[in-house]
Image 1 (cartoon, one colour):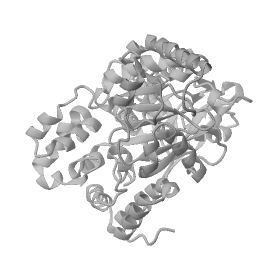
Image 2: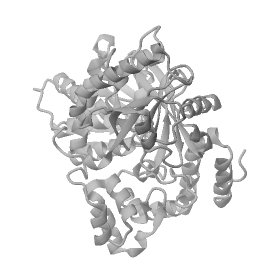
Image 3: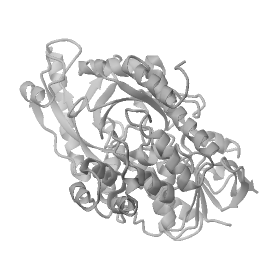
Image 4: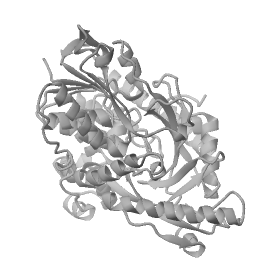
Length: 544
């Protein structure tokens, strides 16, 4: 079958652009070598934030991200949650010198300037807190702080955001293929003609044809383009985050690393996240893992303001590779977060567009720009973009969890988690429990995962591997690491997708291995005991 555009990559830029193109009536094929959001998108900090630290160097980035944050709240209101942040007035020494007090004042002015962008993303204006107010709000902070300034941001499940954009694209006629690798971009006479691909699960190989290929493969983009003689300059940056097993603070806290870099500790859904590192990375993006030094770097920075995190159980360390614009010389922190669309025409591949850089919060605007360019390359008049007006699947209403619990035989906390992930479609998910009460089984108490949700995702959300459910409904992602939910989830998925018993066992092993790669760098104390329990329960052998 011929298409108007083939999109490579199922991250937020790929799925967002697929949605926009499909809504404008283009014939779209999206190819993703693994699953939605497995690269930088899903391994981001999980925030739709304006980027306060870019105001001086990239003010356009801040403005664009704040504006798009407001749009994302409009089209996926169920998926976002407010995270108020505290920026304490602190140094690593007790007391404050005159110079430090001047820094505190400058910080207050700087955050006050950020307030100009808050209405775009429906954030609350900043507030100056004295020491008494600060410790009343966050008693776990270290002693000796002089106060703080507040600022507002928004959290999100980035995996779900990618999935919803892909489902929306499919709903408008796009063809979506996950676990399908683009092997080669076909060119003829300096013009893109299509893509050769291979399905990693079935071994099927094929060619699909289109005059435009949009390369949104993230850290894999340069290698894909290089095979067609096209250079995609990029300065990849490795970002590591730590997840704690519970909420260790009431508010997000901006902290400083030992080298002066700005970091954060923030509550995120039922957990806490510490992030993030920013280091050049030129290794294989398929072989990414946190090191012990990176874990300690993050912990030390968070503990400098919130000492209690040293007692926390770290459940996993996860990594992504930022596709930052190339620049020689500046430190990683100083690199621009702007995005660029690179045209392959000057390098003998007319019709190939590659996207580099950008932010999760600005994905919709980046997709709009890319779709405008695609329509121009196709020789069509640019049609209006409506992605900021039309809700994503489930985004047309935010159901009340208490009302859902009264309507369906599920507990209110479980209904709340299903409503968060699925929005108005939560009623469809919970309707499966009414049809088959056995599907009311709660598989994971941490994440509120119902058997019905596993079945729903397998039926309706492009699930092809068991590990896809890590990203659809957080199967085996919670503090238990899959002890409670993995085996039953595998059996449910196998029955729904007609897998053989051998396939179910293989998928279960792969799911647990994916979690092991994130847990391995943080095996210590309580987490080590949990890992022994998990491996014993699933017959995985001793930790080694």
